[in-house]
Length: 92
Image (tube, rainbow, N blue to C red):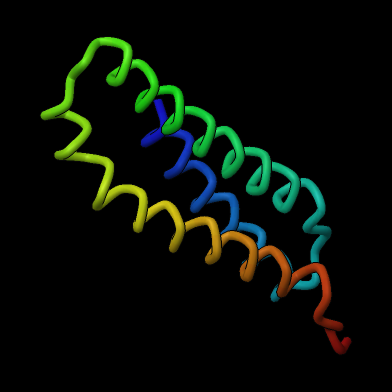
C-alpha cells in the first residue's frame, strides 16, 4: 500500500509543478501530494509494526535500512516541490 500511495504522491507533485508552470491553479494537486505523502509514511510505519508483531526480523532487516533512507529523500523532495509552487511568485 505504501508503494502505491508513494507513487501517487510523486505523480501529483509533478502534476502540481506542471500546472504551476502553465499558470493554472495548483492547490488541489498540492493538497493531494502532501496528503498522499503523509499516508505513505503511515502505511510504511504500519508495515514495519506488523513485521515487528510477527517477529519477522529478516523482513525488517531487508527493507527498513534502504527504505527509510528512500522515504526521507522522497518526503524532502515532496516538501520542496510543493513549496516551490506555494512560495515562488509566478510572473505573468
